[in-house]
Length: 382
Picture 1: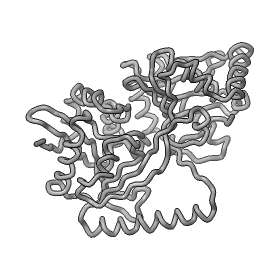
Picture 2: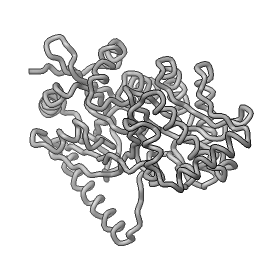
Picture 3: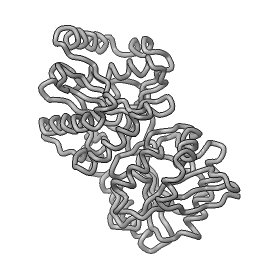
Picture 4: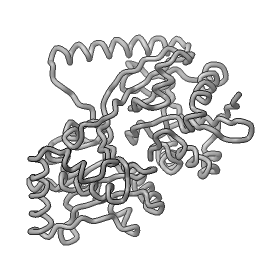
């Protein structure tokens, strides 16, 4: 039987190696569950939260982590404020593929222990909210099983397209439509050959400055499209400066630019984690949209990832343009679990009413509404 401990942030900072060892043992590790990502989030955003970092021990051995944080808030599916438990970083950072941090062999036992702990020992909560959980995650498997001691609502909210590179880059390239291949080849000849554009990998000493350039390009594109974006603000910029430096030091940052004479034209902000690249955010100078700078850059990111032996480029949530790069995707779901409290019961009723109302409106209008990561601006269409 596992022992559950509710750790504080000081304890988090002591177990970096153990934490990342468990990330490596996950069925599908992601940057968004790593110690670096979670610890940096606590330093930059944690002042608004109470830590509920659940550690699972077999004897003296740490075998699992469920990194939660608590605050009064209204989540996207709710109709009123609740004492909400969230996966660390999921709200401010739009993390995808969040999951229990444990090996496949320990996952079921860890989650059973989490349910018992939240039912009987730590009861100061109303709603447990997991956002954009992948279809093959342990959390979704738990939520859809019959061992959860709480009422559960879950629904698919988006999809994460991914490029399978196990077949090699040439096979992937040939899987694209002929028209798309010719268009990309033409862009490469025009930009790299005729216009002096270069593919630039962020230099370790320039990581912070490169992050600022990414934010500037993202802001310019959003303004040109007259779209609001939440990928802005000094606190968020400082977080990404921080995490970019850390990941760069570990060889896990893939911040790539197209530049002309040192001036950035477009950017893709990606992370590497255990053989996969995660394409997190993009930015582009609107003046270069007509040249296809964003599309060409993503194509080169995919090429580089294949050449370096990565098995996948995950394009993460939303954006119908991403489906033009691959036919593969993973469904992403939102999971809500409700405690046995009066406020939780009221919140569940309100959330169901709101969901039914929104669904009815969408059915009536019959207009698709793809859900992007907050702040994500799609590159130019092809």
